[in-house]
Amino acid sequence: MEQVFTLKALVKKYGSKAQKESFKKNGNLTGKEFTLLLKSVETEWESTKVVGRGSKRIITCYGKRPKKLKPVDNRCKNGQGQLVGEFELNSLVVNYLIQNDNNVRPMSTTKWITELGIIDTRLRGSIYGNKGIHLEKLQMQFSKENKDYNKDKSDIDMLDEFLHVYLKHIKSSIVSVFNKLAKAKVIIHHKEVWGCTTQNRHRKLSRQEVKSIAEIRSSLLNTHGLKARDLFKSNMKEVKVFNKDFGEQLDEELNLRFYYDAHYCVLQDSDLGVLDYLKTLHKKSEVNFTYSLNEERTFIMTHVYKDLQGKHSLKLAKEREKNISNNSDSNRIKCLKIMKQYAPMWEVLLEYFRCTSCLKSKSNEVESKATEPTKVKIDELVFEFPNNSNMTNSLAIFPGIH
Image (tube, rainbow, N blue to C red; front, side, top):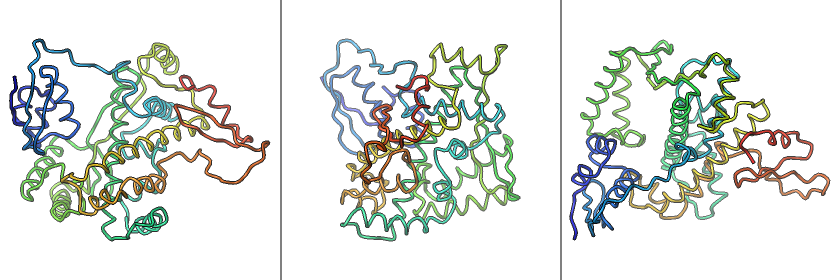
Protein backbone atom coordinates (compact mmCIF):
# COMPACT_ATOMS: atom_id res chain seq x y z
CA MET A 1 0.00 0.00 0.00
CA GLU A 2 1.21 3.51 -0.77
CA GLN A 3 -0.11 7.06 -0.48
CA VAL A 4 1.12 10.33 -2.02
CA PHE A 5 1.11 13.64 -0.12
CA THR A 6 2.00 17.22 -0.93
CA LEU A 7 4.03 18.87 1.81
CA LYS A 8 0.97 20.89 2.83
CA ALA A 9 -1.17 17.75 3.14
CA LEU A 10 1.54 15.90 5.07
CA VAL A 11 1.90 18.74 7.56
CA LYS A 12 -1.87 18.91 7.99
CA LYS A 13 -2.14 15.17 8.72
CA TYR A 14 1.04 14.44 10.69
CA GLY A 15 2.54 17.79 11.74
CA SER A 16 2.85 19.01 15.30
CA LYS A 17 1.27 22.29 16.35
CA ALA A 18 4.65 24.06 15.96
CA GLN A 19 5.20 22.57 12.49
CA LYS A 20 1.73 23.61 11.35
CA GLU A 21 2.28 27.16 12.60
CA SER A 22 5.69 27.31 10.89
CA PHE A 23 4.23 26.09 7.58
CA LYS A 24 1.34 28.54 7.82
CA LYS A 25 3.76 31.41 8.46
CA ASN A 26 6.50 30.54 5.94
CA GLY A 27 4.80 28.26 3.39
CA ASN A 28 7.59 25.72 3.98
CA LEU A 29 9.49 23.83 6.69
CA THR A 30 13.14 24.07 7.67
CA GLY A 31 15.35 21.01 7.17
CA LYS A 32 15.16 20.15 10.86
CA GLU A 33 11.37 20.56 10.98
CA PHE A 34 10.97 18.35 7.89
CA THR A 35 13.19 15.63 9.40
CA LEU A 36 11.08 15.61 12.58
CA LEU A 37 7.90 15.48 10.48
CA LEU A 38 9.16 12.39 8.63
CA LYS A 39 9.88 10.70 11.97
CA SER A 40 6.21 11.18 12.89
CA VAL A 41 5.13 9.85 9.48
CA GLU A 42 7.26 6.74 9.90
CA THR A 43 5.35 5.74 13.02
CA GLU A 44 2.48 4.87 10.59
CA TRP A 45 4.43 4.02 7.41
CA GLU A 46 7.40 1.71 6.88
CA SER A 47 9.25 4.02 4.48
CA THR A 48 8.99 7.30 2.59
CA LYS A 49 10.33 8.77 -0.66
CA VAL A 50 10.73 12.52 -1.20
CA VAL A 51 10.80 14.12 -4.66
CA GLY A 52 11.35 17.85 -5.32
CA ARG A 53 12.48 20.70 -3.14
CA GLY A 54 11.07 23.19 -0.67
CA SER A 55 7.34 23.68 -0.56
CA LYS A 56 6.92 21.71 -3.81
CA ARG A 57 8.13 18.45 -2.28
CA ILE A 58 6.02 15.37 -2.96
CA ILE A 59 6.20 12.63 -0.35
CA THR A 60 5.22 9.04 -1.13
CA CYS A 61 4.57 6.79 1.88
CA TYR A 62 4.93 3.01 1.54
CA GLY A 63 3.69 0.10 3.67
CA LYS A 64 0.99 1.23 6.09
CA ARG A 65 1.78 -0.29 9.47
CA PRO A 66 -0.96 -2.44 11.04
CA LYS A 67 -0.34 -0.67 14.33
CA LYS A 68 1.08 2.81 14.93
CA LEU A 69 4.51 2.76 16.55
CA LYS A 70 5.27 4.77 19.64
CA PRO A 71 7.61 7.70 18.81
CA VAL A 72 11.19 6.97 19.78
CA ASP A 73 12.15 9.27 22.62
CA ASN A 74 15.91 9.74 22.80
CA ARG A 75 15.66 12.29 25.56
CA CYS A 76 17.12 11.59 28.97
CA LYS A 77 17.18 13.59 32.18
CA ASN A 78 14.42 15.86 30.98
CA GLY A 79 16.31 17.17 27.97
CA GLN A 80 19.77 17.48 29.49
CA GLY A 81 22.67 16.79 27.19
CA GLN A 82 20.86 17.94 24.04
CA LEU A 83 22.62 21.29 24.14
CA VAL A 84 26.33 21.43 23.50
CA GLY A 85 28.04 22.42 26.76
CA GLU A 86 24.76 22.56 28.68
CA PHE A 87 26.38 21.87 32.06
CA GLU A 88 28.95 24.59 31.48
CA LEU A 89 26.42 27.16 30.28
CA ASN A 90 24.03 26.39 33.17
CA SER A 91 26.90 26.89 35.60
CA LEU A 92 28.10 30.14 34.01
CA VAL A 93 24.61 31.69 34.17
CA VAL A 94 24.08 30.68 37.82
CA ASN A 95 27.57 31.84 38.76
CA TYR A 96 27.08 35.19 37.02
CA LEU A 97 23.92 35.86 39.03
CA ILE A 98 25.69 34.90 42.28
CA GLN A 99 28.69 37.13 41.52
CA ASN A 100 26.35 40.05 40.80
CA ASP A 101 24.43 39.55 44.07
CA ASN A 102 21.39 38.31 42.15
CA ASN A 103 20.81 41.82 40.83
CA VAL A 104 21.06 41.91 37.04
CA ARG A 105 19.05 44.19 34.75
CA PRO A 106 17.31 42.75 31.64
CA MET A 107 19.83 42.23 28.83
CA SER A 108 19.78 41.20 25.18
CA THR A 109 21.16 37.74 24.35
CA THR A 110 24.19 39.45 22.75
CA LYS A 111 24.85 41.32 25.99
CA TRP A 112 24.41 38.14 28.05
CA ILE A 113 26.93 36.10 26.06
CA THR A 114 29.35 39.05 26.17
CA GLU A 115 29.00 39.36 29.95
CA LEU A 116 29.61 35.62 30.34
CA GLY A 117 32.79 35.87 28.28
CA ILE A 118 31.54 33.56 25.52
CA ILE A 119 32.16 36.23 22.88
CA ASP A 120 34.56 39.13 23.16
CA THR A 121 34.78 42.71 21.93
CA ARG A 122 36.22 41.70 18.54
CA LEU A 123 33.21 39.57 17.63
CA ARG A 124 30.70 41.96 19.16
CA GLY A 125 32.33 44.92 17.40
CA SER A 126 32.11 43.17 14.04
CA ILE A 127 28.33 42.91 14.41
CA TYR A 128 27.82 46.65 14.74
CA GLY A 129 31.04 48.11 13.31
CA ASN A 130 32.98 48.14 10.06
CA LYS A 131 33.32 44.55 8.80
CA GLY A 132 35.80 45.63 6.13
CA ILE A 133 38.61 45.92 8.69
CA HIS A 134 38.12 42.30 9.72
CA LEU A 135 37.64 41.09 6.15
CA GLU A 136 41.07 42.29 5.03
CA LYS A 137 42.77 40.46 7.91
CA LEU A 138 40.70 37.33 7.33
CA GLN A 139 41.50 37.25 3.62
CA MET A 140 45.20 37.32 4.46
CA GLN A 141 44.66 34.40 6.83
CA PHE A 142 42.59 32.48 4.24
CA SER A 143 45.44 32.90 1.75
CA LYS A 144 47.96 31.42 4.21
CA GLU A 145 45.72 28.45 5.02
CA ASN A 146 44.65 27.56 1.45
CA LYS A 147 46.91 27.96 -1.59
CA ASP A 148 43.91 27.60 -3.95
CA TYR A 149 42.00 30.46 -2.33
CA ASN A 150 41.27 33.45 -4.57
CA LYS A 151 40.50 36.73 -2.83
CA ASP A 152 37.11 38.20 -3.73
CA LYS A 153 35.20 41.25 -2.46
CA SER A 154 32.11 39.04 -2.00
CA ASP A 155 33.95 37.17 0.77
CA ILE A 156 31.93 39.54 2.95
CA ASP A 157 29.10 37.01 2.38
CA MET A 158 31.11 34.40 4.27
CA LEU A 159 31.79 36.79 7.13
CA ASP A 160 28.09 37.70 7.32
CA GLU A 161 27.10 34.03 7.27
CA PHE A 162 29.50 33.20 10.08
CA LEU A 163 28.27 36.05 12.28
CA HIS A 164 24.63 35.15 11.64
CA VAL A 165 24.87 31.36 12.04
CA TYR A 166 27.36 31.19 14.91
CA LEU A 167 25.61 33.85 16.97
CA LYS A 168 22.20 32.34 16.22
CA HIS A 169 23.31 29.01 17.72
CA ILE A 170 24.90 30.60 20.80
CA LYS A 171 21.90 32.86 21.43
CA SER A 172 19.48 29.98 20.96
CA SER A 173 21.50 27.92 23.47
CA ILE A 174 21.45 30.55 26.19
CA VAL A 175 17.69 31.15 25.81
CA SER A 176 17.16 27.39 26.05
CA VAL A 177 19.26 27.32 29.22
CA PHE A 178 17.21 30.18 30.71
CA ASN A 179 14.04 28.20 30.02
CA LYS A 180 15.43 24.95 31.47
CA LEU A 181 16.77 26.62 34.60
CA ALA A 182 13.40 28.34 35.08
CA LYS A 183 11.54 25.05 34.60
CA ALA A 184 13.76 23.43 37.24
CA LYS A 185 13.01 26.40 39.55
CA VAL A 186 16.67 27.44 39.72
CA ILE A 187 15.91 30.92 38.31
CA ILE A 188 12.98 33.15 37.48
CA HIS A 189 13.11 34.21 33.83
CA HIS A 190 11.10 36.86 31.99
CA LYS A 191 11.44 38.08 28.41
CA GLU A 192 10.71 41.72 27.70
CA VAL A 193 10.91 43.88 24.57
CA TRP A 194 13.29 46.81 24.96
CA GLY A 195 14.29 49.58 22.60
CA CYS A 196 17.11 52.07 22.14
CA THR A 197 15.70 55.56 21.67
CA THR A 198 17.02 58.22 19.30
CA GLN A 199 18.56 59.79 22.44
CA ASN A 200 20.49 56.51 22.96
CA ARG A 201 18.47 55.56 26.05
CA HIS A 202 17.47 51.93 26.57
CA ARG A 203 14.03 51.26 28.03
CA LYS A 204 11.25 48.69 28.13
CA LEU A 205 8.65 49.20 25.38
CA SER A 206 4.91 49.40 25.95
CA ARG A 207 2.50 46.87 24.45
CA GLN A 208 1.27 49.47 21.97
CA GLU A 209 4.83 50.18 20.85
CA VAL A 210 5.50 46.46 20.34
CA LYS A 211 2.28 46.15 18.34
CA SER A 212 3.24 49.15 16.19
CA ILE A 213 6.66 47.64 15.44
CA ALA A 214 5.05 44.38 14.32
CA GLU A 215 2.68 46.27 12.03
CA ILE A 216 5.50 48.32 10.47
CA ARG A 217 7.63 45.20 9.93
CA SER A 218 4.79 43.19 8.41
CA SER A 219 3.82 46.02 6.07
CA LEU A 220 7.38 46.53 4.83
CA LEU A 221 7.93 42.78 4.29
CA ASN A 222 4.90 42.76 2.01
CA THR A 223 5.99 45.96 0.25
CA HIS A 224 9.43 44.55 -0.57
CA GLY A 225 8.22 41.02 -1.34
CA LEU A 226 10.28 39.45 1.46
CA LYS A 227 9.77 36.73 4.04
CA ALA A 228 11.09 37.03 7.60
CA ARG A 229 13.75 34.37 6.93
CA ASP A 230 15.19 36.51 4.10
CA LEU A 231 16.30 39.27 6.44
CA PHE A 232 19.60 37.67 7.46
CA LYS A 233 20.80 38.00 3.83
CA SER A 234 22.28 41.40 4.60
CA ASN A 235 23.83 41.87 1.13
CA MET A 236 20.56 41.23 -0.72
CA LYS A 237 19.42 44.47 -2.40
CA GLU A 238 15.82 44.14 -1.22
CA VAL A 239 16.96 43.50 2.36
CA LYS A 240 19.17 46.60 2.34
CA VAL A 241 16.20 48.71 1.19
CA PHE A 242 13.95 47.05 3.79
CA ASN A 243 16.42 47.78 6.61
CA LYS A 244 16.73 51.41 5.52
CA ASP A 245 12.95 51.90 5.36
CA PHE A 246 12.38 50.01 8.61
CA GLY A 247 14.96 52.13 10.45
CA GLU A 248 13.46 55.34 9.12
CA GLN A 249 9.93 54.38 10.19
CA LEU A 250 11.09 53.30 13.68
CA ASP A 251 12.73 56.72 14.01
CA GLU A 252 9.86 58.77 12.60
CA GLU A 253 6.95 56.97 14.24
CA LEU A 254 8.40 55.68 17.52
CA ASN A 255 11.64 57.64 18.09
CA LEU A 256 13.57 54.36 18.22
CA ARG A 257 16.95 53.43 16.74
CA PHE A 258 16.35 49.67 17.22
CA TYR A 259 14.58 47.18 19.50
CA TYR A 260 15.44 43.77 20.97
CA ASP A 261 14.32 40.98 23.30
CA ALA A 262 15.73 41.52 26.79
CA HIS A 263 16.00 38.62 29.24
CA TYR A 264 15.57 39.20 32.95
CA CYS A 265 16.87 36.46 35.24
CA VAL A 266 17.07 36.16 39.00
CA LEU A 267 17.96 33.18 41.21
CA GLN A 268 15.06 31.60 43.06
CA ASP A 269 15.16 32.15 46.80
CA SER A 270 13.58 30.35 49.74
CA ASP A 271 13.63 30.33 53.51
CA LEU A 272 16.93 28.44 53.22
CA GLY A 273 18.68 31.31 51.44
CA VAL A 274 19.92 31.32 47.85
CA LEU A 275 23.07 29.21 48.24
CA ASP A 276 21.47 26.56 50.45
CA TYR A 277 18.54 26.42 48.05
CA LEU A 278 20.93 25.88 45.11
CA LYS A 279 22.70 23.16 47.09
CA THR A 280 19.36 21.39 47.60
CA LEU A 281 18.51 21.60 43.89
CA HIS A 282 22.00 20.40 42.95
CA LYS A 283 21.55 17.26 45.07
CA LYS A 284 18.21 16.53 43.38
CA SER A 285 20.00 16.57 39.97
CA GLU A 286 16.92 17.87 38.16
CA VAL A 287 19.23 20.09 36.17
CA ASN A 288 23.02 19.70 35.98
CA PHE A 289 25.06 22.70 37.13
CA THR A 290 27.64 23.82 39.66
CA TYR A 291 27.57 27.06 41.62
CA SER A 292 30.86 27.15 43.55
CA LEU A 293 33.08 28.83 40.96
CA ASN A 294 35.84 31.25 41.82
CA GLU A 295 37.38 33.53 39.18
CA GLU A 296 39.93 30.95 38.09
CA ARG A 297 37.43 28.12 37.72
CA THR A 298 35.00 30.41 35.92
CA PHE A 299 37.74 31.18 33.39
CA ILE A 300 38.34 27.47 32.76
CA MET A 301 34.62 26.69 32.60
CA THR A 302 34.14 29.43 30.00
CA HIS A 303 36.89 28.07 27.79
CA VAL A 304 35.67 24.48 28.12
CA TYR A 305 32.32 25.73 26.82
CA LYS A 306 33.90 27.74 23.99
CA ASP A 307 35.90 24.72 22.86
CA LEU A 308 32.88 22.40 22.91
CA GLN A 309 30.80 24.95 21.01
CA GLY A 310 33.60 25.69 18.53
CA LYS A 311 34.09 22.01 17.68
CA HIS A 312 30.34 21.58 17.25
CA SER A 313 30.11 24.67 15.04
CA LEU A 314 32.89 23.37 12.78
CA LYS A 315 31.19 19.97 12.55
CA LEU A 316 27.95 21.64 11.40
CA ALA A 317 29.89 23.76 8.90
CA LYS A 318 31.37 20.60 7.36
CA GLU A 319 27.84 19.22 6.96
CA ARG A 320 26.61 22.46 5.37
CA GLU A 321 29.53 22.41 2.95
CA LYS A 322 28.07 19.24 1.41
CA ASN A 323 24.80 21.03 0.61
CA ILE A 324 25.53 22.93 -2.60
CA SER A 325 21.86 23.27 -3.57
CA ASN A 326 20.74 25.59 -0.76
CA ASN A 327 18.65 28.30 -2.49
CA SER A 328 19.42 30.85 0.20
CA ASP A 329 23.19 30.68 -0.42
CA SER A 330 24.81 33.56 -2.28
CA ASN A 331 26.90 32.81 -5.37
CA ARG A 332 30.08 33.23 -3.34
CA ILE A 333 28.96 30.80 -0.63
CA LYS A 334 28.01 28.21 -3.29
CA CYS A 335 31.41 28.65 -4.94
CA LEU A 336 33.24 28.15 -1.64
CA LYS A 337 31.25 24.98 -0.94
CA ILE A 338 32.01 23.56 -4.39
CA MET A 339 35.72 24.38 -3.94
CA LYS A 340 35.65 22.69 -0.51
CA GLN A 341 36.84 25.94 1.07
CA TYR A 342 33.73 26.71 3.14
CA ALA A 343 34.61 24.57 6.20
CA PRO A 344 38.34 25.53 6.23
CA MET A 345 37.33 29.21 6.12
CA TRP A 346 34.85 28.57 8.94
CA GLU A 347 37.68 27.16 11.05
CA VAL A 348 39.76 30.28 10.40
CA LEU A 349 36.79 32.45 11.39
CA LEU A 350 36.37 30.53 14.66
CA GLU A 351 40.02 31.10 15.54
CA TYR A 352 40.09 34.73 14.39
CA PHE A 353 37.06 35.65 16.52
CA ARG A 354 38.44 33.65 19.47
CA CYS A 355 35.49 31.25 19.51
CA THR A 356 37.76 28.37 20.53
CA SER A 357 39.59 27.84 23.78
CA CYS A 358 42.85 29.66 24.44
CA LEU A 359 43.83 26.99 26.96
CA LYS A 360 45.30 24.66 24.37
CA SER A 361 49.00 24.96 23.95
CA LYS A 362 49.96 25.49 20.30
CA SER A 363 53.66 25.84 20.96
CA ASN A 364 55.95 23.61 18.91
CA GLU A 365 58.93 24.27 21.15
CA VAL A 366 60.72 21.23 22.54
CA GLU A 367 60.38 21.31 26.28
CA SER A 368 62.30 19.37 28.84
CA LYS A 369 60.53 16.72 30.85
CA ALA A 370 60.65 18.97 33.90
CA THR A 371 58.73 21.76 32.14
CA GLU A 372 56.40 19.54 30.10
CA PRO A 373 52.80 20.81 30.41
CA THR A 374 50.20 18.99 32.44
CA LYS A 375 47.37 17.54 30.33
CA VAL A 376 43.80 17.48 31.62
CA LYS A 377 41.04 15.62 29.79
CA ILE A 378 37.45 16.89 30.02
CA ASP A 379 34.67 15.42 27.88
CA GLU A 380 37.13 14.09 25.26
CA LEU A 381 38.93 17.47 25.14
CA VAL A 382 42.56 17.75 26.20
CA PHE A 383 43.72 20.99 27.83
CA GLU A 384 47.37 21.74 28.49
CA PHE A 385 48.72 23.87 31.33
CA PRO A 386 52.28 24.79 32.30
CA ASN A 387 53.40 22.98 35.44
CA ASN A 388 53.70 26.29 37.26
CA SER A 389 50.00 26.98 36.69
CA ASN A 390 47.63 26.43 39.61
CA MET A 391 44.68 26.11 37.19
CA THR A 392 45.10 22.33 36.95
CA ASN A 393 44.22 21.83 40.60
CA SER A 394 41.03 23.89 40.35
CA LEU A 395 39.47 21.34 37.99
CA ALA A 396 39.47 18.66 40.66
CA ILE A 397 36.67 20.32 42.60
CA PHE A 398 34.27 20.80 39.70
CA PRO A 399 31.14 18.82 40.67
CA GLY A 400 30.13 16.69 37.72
CA ILE A 401 33.36 17.09 35.73
CA HIS A 402 35.70 14.10 35.46
